[in-house]
Image (cartoon, rainbow, N blue to C red; front, top):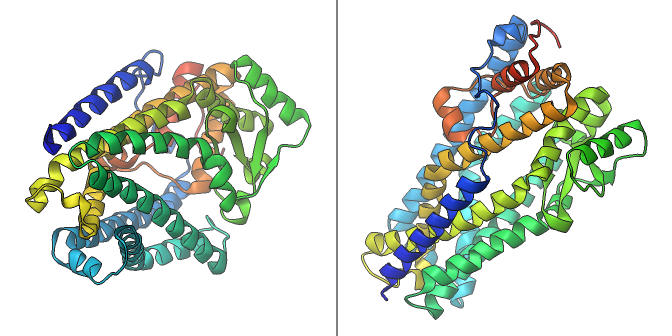
Length: 414
Protein backbone atom coordinates (compact mmCIF):
# COMPACT_ATOMS: atom_id res chain seq x y z
CA UNK A 1 0.00 0.00 0.00
CA UNK A 2 1.03 3.59 -0.50
CA UNK A 3 1.88 5.92 2.34
CA UNK A 4 -1.45 7.69 1.82
CA UNK A 5 -3.45 4.46 2.18
CA UNK A 6 -1.59 3.50 5.34
CA UNK A 7 -2.34 6.97 6.74
CA UNK A 8 -6.02 6.74 5.81
CA UNK A 9 -6.28 3.29 7.34
CA UNK A 10 -4.69 4.54 10.56
CA UNK A 11 -7.18 7.41 10.77
CA UNK A 12 -10.15 5.11 10.21
CA UNK A 13 -9.08 2.37 12.65
CA UNK A 14 -8.03 4.76 15.42
CA UNK A 15 -11.05 7.01 14.85
CA UNK A 16 -13.53 4.13 15.03
CA UNK A 17 -11.81 2.77 18.14
CA UNK A 18 -11.96 6.24 19.72
CA UNK A 19 -15.69 6.48 18.99
CA UNK A 20 -16.35 3.00 20.43
CA UNK A 21 -14.42 3.69 23.66
CA UNK A 22 -16.13 7.07 24.05
CA UNK A 23 -19.57 5.55 23.44
CA UNK A 24 -18.98 2.82 26.02
CA UNK A 25 -17.21 4.72 28.81
CA UNK A 26 -18.12 8.41 28.56
CA UNK A 27 -21.17 9.37 30.69
CA UNK A 28 -23.29 11.07 28.03
CA UNK A 29 -26.09 11.85 30.51
CA UNK A 30 -24.27 12.23 33.83
CA UNK A 31 -26.97 14.13 35.77
CA UNK A 32 -30.21 12.38 36.71
CA UNK A 33 -33.01 14.47 35.26
CA UNK A 34 -30.63 16.31 32.91
CA UNK A 35 -28.05 19.02 33.47
CA UNK A 36 -29.78 22.18 34.75
CA UNK A 37 -29.15 25.74 33.64
CA UNK A 38 -26.57 27.63 35.71
CA UNK A 39 -27.76 29.53 38.74
CA UNK A 40 -27.52 33.30 38.73
CA UNK A 41 -24.18 34.59 40.04
CA UNK A 42 -26.12 37.11 42.13
CA UNK A 43 -27.74 34.21 44.00
CA UNK A 44 -24.31 32.87 44.96
CA UNK A 45 -21.88 35.76 45.32
CA UNK A 46 -22.05 39.32 46.56
CA UNK A 47 -21.70 42.20 44.06
CA UNK A 48 -18.24 42.92 45.48
CA UNK A 49 -17.12 39.32 44.93
CA UNK A 50 -18.45 39.34 41.37
CA UNK A 51 -16.72 42.64 40.59
CA UNK A 52 -13.38 41.41 42.00
CA UNK A 53 -13.57 38.16 40.01
CA UNK A 54 -14.38 40.04 36.81
CA UNK A 55 -11.59 42.56 37.42
CA UNK A 56 -9.06 39.75 37.57
CA UNK A 57 -10.46 37.15 35.17
CA UNK A 58 -11.46 39.32 32.20
CA UNK A 59 -7.91 40.68 31.60
CA UNK A 60 -6.40 37.27 32.47
CA UNK A 61 -8.61 35.59 29.88
CA UNK A 62 -7.62 38.12 27.21
CA UNK A 63 -3.95 37.64 28.14
CA UNK A 64 -4.36 33.91 27.64
CA UNK A 65 -6.05 34.37 24.28
CA UNK A 66 -3.37 36.82 23.15
CA UNK A 67 -0.58 34.47 24.25
CA UNK A 68 -2.19 31.58 22.38
CA UNK A 69 -2.66 33.70 19.25
CA UNK A 70 0.95 34.95 19.24
CA UNK A 71 2.31 31.44 19.90
CA UNK A 72 0.20 29.95 17.13
CA UNK A 73 1.11 32.75 14.70
CA UNK A 74 4.85 32.31 15.27
CA UNK A 75 4.53 28.51 15.00
CA UNK A 76 2.58 28.76 11.73
CA UNK A 77 4.99 31.30 10.22
CA UNK A 78 7.98 29.11 11.03
CA UNK A 79 6.21 25.99 9.80
CA UNK A 80 4.56 27.20 6.59
CA UNK A 81 7.22 29.58 5.30
CA UNK A 82 10.88 29.08 4.45
CA UNK A 83 12.00 30.53 7.79
CA UNK A 84 11.68 27.27 9.68
CA UNK A 85 13.49 25.05 7.14
CA UNK A 86 16.21 27.68 6.79
CA UNK A 87 16.68 27.67 10.56
CA UNK A 88 16.95 23.87 10.63
CA UNK A 89 19.34 24.04 7.68
CA UNK A 90 21.83 25.89 9.87
CA UNK A 91 22.03 22.92 12.25
CA UNK A 92 24.62 20.19 11.95
CA UNK A 93 24.92 16.58 13.03
CA UNK A 94 23.14 13.27 12.59
CA UNK A 95 19.45 13.54 11.71
CA UNK A 96 18.32 12.84 15.27
CA UNK A 97 20.72 15.45 16.65
CA UNK A 98 19.28 18.01 14.22
CA UNK A 99 15.77 17.08 15.34
CA UNK A 100 16.70 17.65 18.98
CA UNK A 101 18.37 20.96 18.15
CA UNK A 102 15.38 22.07 16.06
CA UNK A 103 12.88 21.26 18.79
CA UNK A 104 14.97 23.10 21.37
CA UNK A 105 15.36 26.16 19.13
CA UNK A 106 11.66 26.32 18.30
CA UNK A 107 10.67 25.80 21.94
CA UNK A 108 12.95 28.64 23.02
CA UNK A 109 11.49 30.93 20.35
CA UNK A 110 7.96 30.02 21.41
CA UNK A 111 8.78 30.62 25.07
CA UNK A 112 10.42 33.98 24.37
CA UNK A 113 7.53 35.38 22.32
CA UNK A 114 4.99 34.42 25.01
CA UNK A 115 7.19 35.34 27.99
CA UNK A 116 5.81 38.90 28.28
CA UNK A 117 2.28 37.51 28.65
CA UNK A 118 3.47 35.05 31.30
CA UNK A 119 5.27 37.80 33.23
CA UNK A 120 2.22 40.06 33.21
CA UNK A 121 0.02 37.13 34.22
CA UNK A 122 2.20 36.22 37.18
CA UNK A 123 2.45 39.85 38.24
CA UNK A 124 -1.35 40.11 38.29
CA UNK A 125 -1.63 36.81 40.19
CA UNK A 126 0.69 38.24 42.85
CA UNK A 127 -1.27 41.49 42.99
CA UNK A 128 -4.59 39.66 43.46
CA UNK A 129 -3.20 37.21 45.99
CA UNK A 130 -3.63 34.11 43.81
CA UNK A 131 0.07 33.35 43.90
CA UNK A 132 2.69 33.68 46.59
CA UNK A 133 5.55 32.32 44.48
CA UNK A 134 8.53 34.64 44.23
CA UNK A 135 9.94 35.45 40.82
CA UNK A 136 12.96 33.17 41.25
CA UNK A 137 11.01 29.95 41.95
CA UNK A 138 8.48 30.98 39.30
CA UNK A 139 11.27 31.21 36.71
CA UNK A 140 12.56 27.78 37.80
CA UNK A 141 9.10 26.28 37.28
CA UNK A 142 8.96 27.96 33.87
CA UNK A 143 12.28 26.36 32.96
CA UNK A 144 11.10 22.95 34.19
CA UNK A 145 8.01 23.18 32.00
CA UNK A 146 10.16 24.15 29.03
CA UNK A 147 12.45 21.15 29.57
CA UNK A 148 9.45 18.84 29.89
CA UNK A 149 7.96 20.24 26.67
CA UNK A 150 11.26 19.78 24.80
CA UNK A 151 11.64 16.18 26.02
CA UNK A 152 8.08 15.23 25.04
CA UNK A 153 8.23 16.97 21.65
CA UNK A 154 11.63 15.51 20.83
CA UNK A 155 10.48 12.00 21.69
CA UNK A 156 7.38 12.45 19.53
CA UNK A 157 9.38 13.65 16.53
CA UNK A 158 12.17 11.09 16.89
CA UNK A 159 9.61 8.28 16.84
CA UNK A 160 7.78 9.84 13.89
CA UNK A 161 10.89 10.42 11.80
CA UNK A 162 12.51 7.16 12.86
CA UNK A 163 9.42 5.26 11.71
CA UNK A 164 9.22 7.28 8.47
CA UNK A 165 12.86 6.47 7.72
CA UNK A 166 12.52 2.77 8.60
CA UNK A 167 9.01 2.01 7.22
CA UNK A 168 8.68 4.37 4.27
CA UNK A 169 5.04 3.55 3.51
CA UNK A 170 3.63 1.99 6.70
CA UNK A 171 5.08 4.57 9.10
CA UNK A 172 1.68 6.14 10.03
CA UNK A 173 0.41 2.82 11.40
CA UNK A 174 3.68 1.89 13.09
CA UNK A 175 4.18 5.33 14.62
CA UNK A 176 0.54 5.43 15.70
CA UNK A 177 0.92 2.17 17.63
CA UNK A 178 4.25 3.17 19.20
CA UNK A 179 3.19 6.69 20.21
CA UNK A 180 -0.19 5.45 21.44
CA UNK A 181 1.65 3.00 23.68
CA UNK A 182 3.96 5.79 24.88
CA UNK A 183 0.92 7.88 25.85
CA UNK A 184 -0.28 5.02 28.04
CA UNK A 185 3.17 4.62 29.60
CA UNK A 186 3.49 8.37 30.19
CA UNK A 187 0.14 8.52 31.96
CA UNK A 188 1.19 5.60 34.16
CA UNK A 189 4.59 7.00 35.19
CA UNK A 190 3.61 10.71 35.32
CA UNK A 191 2.71 10.68 39.05
CA UNK A 192 6.05 9.17 40.08
CA UNK A 193 8.42 10.80 37.56
CA UNK A 194 7.03 14.25 36.72
CA UNK A 195 4.82 15.42 39.59
CA UNK A 196 7.64 15.20 42.20
CA UNK A 197 9.62 17.71 40.13
CA UNK A 198 7.02 20.38 40.93
CA UNK A 199 5.68 19.44 44.38
CA UNK A 200 6.63 17.54 47.49
CA UNK A 201 4.12 14.91 48.61
CA UNK A 202 3.49 13.55 52.08
CA UNK A 203 0.86 11.05 53.29
CA UNK A 204 -2.18 12.54 54.99
CA UNK A 205 -1.71 12.24 58.73
CA UNK A 206 -3.70 9.74 60.75
CA UNK A 207 -6.79 11.22 62.30
CA UNK A 208 -10.53 11.71 61.82
CA UNK A 209 -10.14 13.20 58.32
CA UNK A 210 -8.08 10.27 57.07
CA UNK A 211 -10.52 7.81 58.61
CA UNK A 212 -13.46 9.56 56.95
CA UNK A 213 -11.69 9.53 53.57
CA UNK A 214 -10.97 5.81 53.81
CA UNK A 215 -14.60 5.24 54.74
CA UNK A 216 -15.72 7.17 51.66
CA UNK A 217 -13.40 5.07 49.53
CA UNK A 218 -14.99 1.90 50.90
CA UNK A 219 -18.46 3.27 50.14
CA UNK A 220 -17.47 4.05 46.56
CA UNK A 221 -15.73 0.69 46.15
CA UNK A 222 -12.31 2.26 45.56
CA UNK A 223 -9.14 0.63 46.85
CA UNK A 224 -7.05 3.44 48.30
CA UNK A 225 -3.55 2.75 49.54
CA UNK A 226 -2.94 6.32 50.59
CA UNK A 227 -4.02 9.95 50.29
CA UNK A 228 -1.21 12.38 49.55
CA UNK A 229 -0.89 16.06 50.42
CA UNK A 230 1.03 18.36 48.04
CA UNK A 231 2.88 21.42 49.31
CA UNK A 232 1.09 23.60 46.75
CA UNK A 233 0.59 26.55 49.11
CA UNK A 234 4.23 27.60 48.58
CA UNK A 235 3.19 28.38 45.02
CA UNK A 236 -0.52 29.23 44.97
CA UNK A 237 -3.40 30.23 47.20
CA UNK A 238 -5.99 28.48 45.01
CA UNK A 239 -7.57 25.27 46.27
CA UNK A 240 -7.41 22.02 44.34
CA UNK A 241 -7.29 18.25 44.44
CA UNK A 242 -6.80 15.66 41.73
CA UNK A 243 -6.37 11.99 40.91
CA UNK A 244 -3.57 10.89 38.58
CA UNK A 245 -2.08 7.68 37.29
CA UNK A 246 -3.77 4.33 37.06
CA UNK A 247 -3.13 0.85 38.39
CA UNK A 248 -0.30 0.80 40.90
CA UNK A 249 0.56 4.49 40.36
CA UNK A 250 -2.95 5.84 40.98
CA UNK A 251 -3.00 8.50 43.69
CA UNK A 252 -5.46 10.94 45.21
CA UNK A 253 -3.76 14.25 45.99
CA UNK A 254 -5.02 17.16 48.08
CA UNK A 255 -3.42 20.59 48.16
CA UNK A 256 -2.12 21.35 51.65
CA UNK A 257 -4.23 24.52 51.84
CA UNK A 258 -7.35 22.41 51.23
CA UNK A 259 -6.50 20.29 54.27
CA UNK A 260 -5.57 23.36 56.30
CA UNK A 261 -8.28 25.85 55.37
CA UNK A 262 -11.51 23.96 54.60
CA UNK A 263 -13.92 22.30 57.05
CA UNK A 264 -14.01 18.51 57.03
CA UNK A 265 -17.37 18.28 55.26
CA UNK A 266 -16.09 20.36 52.33
CA UNK A 267 -12.86 18.36 52.12
CA UNK A 268 -14.91 15.16 51.97
CA UNK A 269 -16.98 16.63 49.13
CA UNK A 270 -13.76 17.26 47.20
CA UNK A 271 -12.34 13.82 47.97
CA UNK A 272 -15.60 12.10 47.00
CA UNK A 273 -15.35 13.82 43.61
CA UNK A 274 -11.81 12.50 43.10
CA UNK A 275 -12.84 9.04 44.29
CA UNK A 276 -15.56 9.15 41.64
CA UNK A 277 -12.81 9.50 39.04
CA UNK A 278 -10.99 6.53 40.56
CA UNK A 279 -14.18 4.46 40.75
CA UNK A 280 -14.81 4.83 37.02
CA UNK A 281 -11.11 4.59 36.05
CA UNK A 282 -11.40 7.99 34.39
CA UNK A 283 -7.63 8.46 34.13
CA UNK A 284 -7.29 5.10 32.38
CA UNK A 285 -10.19 5.83 30.03
CA UNK A 286 -8.79 9.29 29.29
CA UNK A 287 -5.38 7.78 28.59
CA UNK A 288 -6.86 5.24 26.16
CA UNK A 289 -8.77 8.00 24.37
CA UNK A 290 -5.61 10.14 24.25
CA UNK A 291 -3.64 7.21 22.81
CA UNK A 292 -6.26 6.57 20.13
CA UNK A 293 -6.52 10.29 19.38
CA UNK A 294 -2.75 10.43 19.01
CA UNK A 295 -2.80 7.54 16.53
CA UNK A 296 -5.61 9.19 14.55
CA UNK A 297 -3.68 12.46 14.56
CA UNK A 298 -0.61 10.74 13.16
CA UNK A 299 -2.74 9.29 10.39
CA UNK A 300 -4.07 12.76 9.60
CA UNK A 301 -0.50 14.05 9.61
CA UNK A 302 0.36 11.40 7.04
CA UNK A 303 -2.48 12.65 4.84
CA UNK A 304 -1.82 16.37 5.20
CA UNK A 305 1.97 16.55 5.21
CA UNK A 306 2.51 15.31 1.60
CA UNK A 307 -0.12 17.79 0.40
CA UNK A 308 1.53 20.73 2.15
CA UNK A 309 5.08 19.73 1.16
CA UNK A 310 3.87 18.50 -2.27
CA UNK A 311 5.82 15.28 -2.02
CA UNK A 312 5.85 12.01 -0.10
CA UNK A 313 8.64 11.16 2.30
CA UNK A 314 8.87 14.70 3.67
CA UNK A 315 8.90 13.40 7.22
CA UNK A 316 12.26 11.74 6.67
CA UNK A 317 13.89 15.18 6.44
CA UNK A 318 14.60 17.11 9.71
CA UNK A 319 13.72 20.32 7.88
CA UNK A 320 10.07 19.24 8.27
CA UNK A 321 10.23 19.66 12.06
CA UNK A 322 8.79 23.24 12.08
CA UNK A 323 5.93 22.19 9.79
CA UNK A 324 5.10 19.11 11.88
CA UNK A 325 5.04 21.20 15.05
CA UNK A 326 2.78 23.75 13.35
CA UNK A 327 0.37 21.05 12.14
CA UNK A 328 0.28 19.46 15.61
CA UNK A 329 -0.44 22.86 17.19
CA UNK A 330 -3.30 23.50 14.76
CA UNK A 331 -4.68 20.00 15.24
CA UNK A 332 -4.53 20.33 19.02
CA UNK A 333 -6.45 23.61 18.91
CA UNK A 334 -9.08 22.27 16.52
CA UNK A 335 -9.62 19.12 18.61
CA UNK A 336 -9.99 21.06 21.87
CA UNK A 337 -13.81 21.19 21.80
CA UNK A 338 -13.96 17.39 21.57
CA UNK A 339 -11.41 16.78 24.30
CA UNK A 340 -12.81 19.39 26.66
CA UNK A 341 -16.42 18.39 25.96
CA UNK A 342 -15.67 14.80 27.00
CA UNK A 343 -13.76 16.09 30.03
CA UNK A 344 -16.75 18.18 31.18
CA UNK A 345 -19.00 15.10 31.04
CA UNK A 346 -16.53 13.09 33.12
CA UNK A 347 -16.14 15.90 35.65
CA UNK A 348 -19.92 16.26 35.91
CA UNK A 349 -20.29 12.56 36.70
CA UNK A 350 -17.66 12.91 39.44
CA UNK A 351 -19.69 15.79 40.91
CA UNK A 352 -22.80 13.62 40.89
CA UNK A 353 -20.88 10.80 42.59
CA UNK A 354 -19.69 13.22 45.26
CA UNK A 355 -23.20 14.44 45.96
CA UNK A 356 -24.66 10.94 46.05
CA UNK A 357 -21.89 9.59 48.28
CA UNK A 358 -21.67 12.39 50.85
CA UNK A 359 -25.40 13.25 50.72
CA UNK A 360 -24.39 16.76 51.76
CA UNK A 361 -25.29 19.23 49.00
CA UNK A 362 -24.84 22.19 51.32
CA UNK A 363 -21.17 21.30 51.91
CA UNK A 364 -20.68 20.75 48.17
CA UNK A 365 -22.17 24.14 47.30
CA UNK A 366 -20.17 25.97 49.94
CA UNK A 367 -17.02 24.18 48.75
CA UNK A 368 -17.66 25.28 45.16
CA UNK A 369 -18.07 28.86 46.35
CA UNK A 370 -14.79 28.69 48.25
CA UNK A 371 -12.94 27.27 45.25
CA UNK A 372 -14.35 30.02 43.03
CA UNK A 373 -13.48 32.77 45.50
CA UNK A 374 -9.94 31.51 45.97
CA UNK A 375 -9.35 31.28 42.20
CA UNK A 376 -11.40 34.39 41.31
CA UNK A 377 -13.20 32.41 38.62
CA UNK A 378 -16.24 33.78 36.83
CA UNK A 379 -18.72 32.74 34.15
CA UNK A 380 -16.72 32.62 30.88
CA UNK A 381 -18.25 33.44 27.49
CA UNK A 382 -20.20 30.49 26.10
CA UNK A 383 -17.85 30.00 23.14
CA UNK A 384 -14.79 30.05 25.42
CA UNK A 385 -16.32 27.48 27.77
CA UNK A 386 -17.22 25.30 24.78
CA UNK A 387 -13.72 25.49 23.33
CA UNK A 388 -11.45 25.63 26.38
CA UNK A 389 -13.50 24.66 29.43
CA UNK A 390 -12.43 21.26 30.79
CA UNK A 391 -14.78 21.47 33.81
CA UNK A 392 -18.36 22.62 34.28
CA UNK A 393 -18.59 26.18 35.51
CA UNK A 394 -19.10 26.87 39.20
CA UNK A 395 -22.66 28.08 38.58
CA UNK A 396 -23.58 24.88 36.72
CA UNK A 397 -22.07 22.72 39.47
CA UNK A 398 -24.05 24.56 42.12
CA UNK A 399 -27.21 24.17 40.04
CA UNK A 400 -26.59 20.41 39.86
CA UNK A 401 -26.18 20.24 43.64
CA UNK A 402 -29.40 22.16 44.19
CA UNK A 403 -31.26 19.91 41.74
CA UNK A 404 -29.99 16.66 43.26
CA UNK A 405 -30.18 17.86 46.84
CA UNK A 406 -33.47 19.74 46.58
CA UNK A 407 -31.88 22.70 48.36
CA UNK A 408 -31.63 26.36 47.53
CA UNK A 409 -28.79 28.30 49.07
CA UNK A 410 -28.99 31.97 49.98
CA UNK A 411 -26.62 34.39 48.32
CA UNK A 412 -23.83 36.27 49.95
CA UNK A 413 -20.70 35.14 51.70
CA UNK A 414 -20.23 31.37 52.01
